[in-house]
View 1 (cartoon, rainbow, N blue to C red):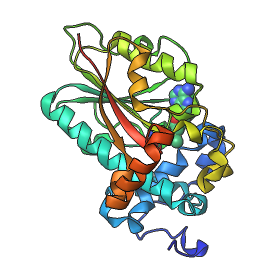
View 2: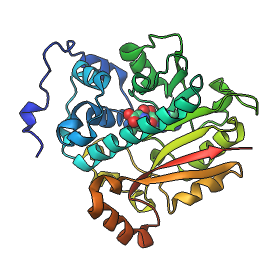
View 3: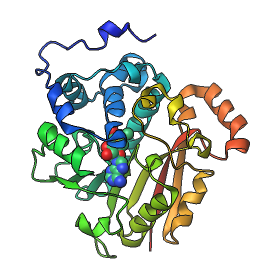
Length: 294
Ligand SMILES: C[S@@+](CC[C@H](N)C(=O)[O-])C[C@H]1O[C@@H](n2cnc3c(N)ncnc32)[C@H](O)[C@@H]1O
C-alpha cells in the first residue's frame, strides 16, 4: 500500500536542500512536465516493487532537491512498475550493447532527468542526453555533464533533421549508436513517430539500436485514466497495433525484440497477455528493440 500522503515528501538524511523554485521557474509545459513521473518512480518506486529497485541514487537526490510532491505518481503504482521494469530492461540492453561496442555512443532522446550513464559508463564510451530546450535548461541546472565523454543537447524530435543537428555519426564505417527513447513517443502524433523512426533508420550506422517503449493503440486518448498523468494535461496520441508495424517505417529497420511488461507479473501476466493479445495486437505496455543493418 502507498504510504500516507504526509510521508511522501520526507527528505532522507543528508539530502541536498530542496530547491522547488527551480521547478516553478522552469514552467514546464504539460508533456515536458511528465518527466517528474518517471523520476519519482526511479527515486521512490523501489519501496513498492523491491525486486525492480533500480538503485538510482541520482534520481533520489534530484527528487529531494526538487522538493516535488509524489502523491499523484504513487497513486498510480502500475505506472511506477512500468518505469522500473523498463529501467531494468534498458539497463540490461545498454550493458549488452556496450559490452560489444565499448567505445560507442549512447543517446537518450527525450531524456528528461534520467541518468543512465551512471550505469552504462564503460570508461571509454560516450553519452548524449537530449530533450526540448525547457527541459535541458532544468537539466543543466541540476545535472550538468561532469565527464568529457558526456554531453547535453537540445532537440525537438518533431523537427526533421535532428540526427544531423545532434552531430550523430552516419555511414557504414561509423561505430554503431545506441539510441534510447523512453516515455516520449506516445505523446507525439503518429506521423511524427514514423518520421523519428525513419530518421533513425536513414542515418544510423549499421549495428545501431533504437530502444523505445510503446503503449497499445487502445490507450490513445486515455491518459486521464492514469492518476499520474490526469493532472498534467498531457495526452497519448500514438500507440501500436502490433509491435511488428514499427519496422514498417523504413526498409532498413528490423524489429529485433519485443518485450511486454506482463513479464513482471509472472505466469498471471503472461496469461493475461496471451488472453488480450488477439484483441490488442500488442502488449498493453512494452519495449521494442529496433536495429539497422546494411
Ligand atoms: C515522460 S517524460 C520521460 C522522460 C525520460 N525519458 C524518462 O524516462 O524519465 C517525456 C519526455 O519527452 C520529452 N519530449 C516530448 N516531446 C518531445 C520532443 N518533441 N522532442 C524531444 N523531447 C520531447 C519531454 O520533454 C519529456 O522530457
